[in-house]
Image (tube, rainbow, N blue to C red; front, side):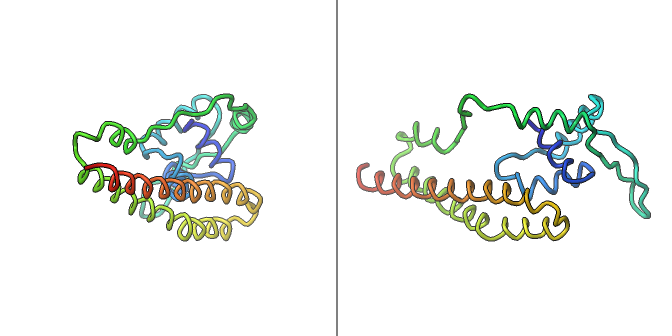
Length: 184
């Protein structure tokens, strides 16, 4: 999937691997992320596959930059991937749920500590979706106003994140209450 995320970012404009990592961190990073080493390895592969091409841009006082551009083949691959329906729900992994599922031997206090910590973390994440993420989206649009229609899709994914956090926060509050009330 990282291949398609990279192709998607390059659809916006030519970028370096570092640029892609920065855009990913501030945009899709909450639901799709990668390490810079993974991005560079994938860029090499998609270039070998003819989906992107690169050129070197010299810089004064700094190392030269390798800038990647989406090819027609890359655009076609991205479009085909976007058009392919997802026919099964994706399974999610959640470490906290696994710990809660098996956590009874730890006792009430340890479980409550774990849940309260997660509650605070999810509240912070929700706050980021409500404040920082819209600011980042506005910054992207200020640099590239031609992406206004894309920003509608960005907002949909931002709203998903916010709704997800609302649901997780509600579940955490419920779980805390159940454990406080029903465990000795």
